[in-house]
Each structure stands twice: as structure tokens, then as C-alpha cells.
Image (cartoon, rainbow, N blue to C red; front, side, top):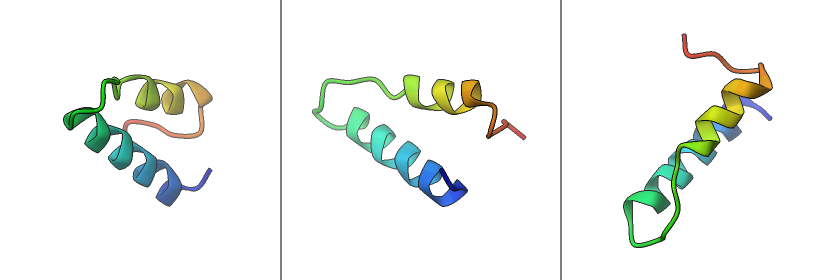
Length: 41
């Protein structure tokens, strides 16, 4: 997964969670961090 794909997926999931769709956005960044390919810095 490229950085652009990761950023787009984070945006889409956060946008969906902010609308009427009933899901949470927290598992996506946790999964990206757990994969070890992305960091918070």
C-alpha cells in the first residue's frame, strides 16, 4: 500500500464515519500502525 493509498483510505473512512454511516474510523489507523509500514511521525 502506498502512502497515497493509505491517506485516501483514512480520508474515506473518516468521512464515512462522520456521516450517517454506522461505523468507526479507529481500526484503520490502528491497522496501518500495526502493519509496521507507517509511523506517526
